[in-house]
Length: 190
Image 1 (tube, rainbow, N blue to C red):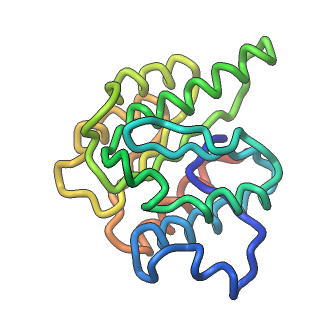
Image 2 (tube, rainbow, N blue to C red):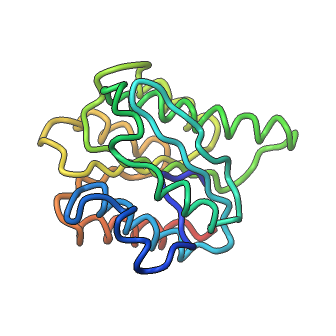
Image 3 (cartoon, one colour):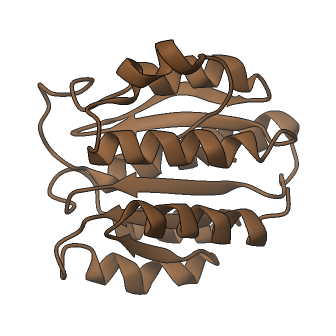
C-alpha cells in the first residue's frame, strides 16, 4: 500500500516537535497516519509527497520505523518553494510506483491502495481524473482525505474516487480524520 504516512520509531519527547505546530492540520495528519500504520504491521507502506510535482520519498517497505522518520521529516516546509497542490502529480507518482512493481513481479499485485491526504484544491499539474482512471484500470483503490476542504474544493474528485473502489472523506475535526482512517483500516484487510 502507498500512503502519506508511516509508523514506529520516535519516542514521546522527540516526537512532539517533529509532528508540526501543535493543533495544526499537519500535526493531526501525522498523528493519525502514525496510528493508522501502526495498526498495519503486515503491510508494505510507502510515502509520496506532492506540491507542483510528486516525489516518492520511500518505496513501499515493511520497515515502518524508517517510514516514521521520513514521515516526521515531511512538513509544510518540505516543498514550500513549489507552492501548488498538484493532486494528479501525487497520484501519478504512486501509480508509476505500482506499475513498476507489477512490471518487476511480472504479475498483478493485489491490495494496492493509495491513501491521499490534501488540504488544498487541485490547482496545478496533470489532471487527477486521468490518474484516478489509471488507478482503477490497474486495480488500485484510492481513498482521498480532504482536510478542512472548502465545501466545493474537491467535490468533483469526491464523485470520481468511488470508481476506484475507494472513498472520499471531507474531514473537519481530528475525530473525523481518525474515523476515516479507522474506516479504511476496517475495509482494507491487508
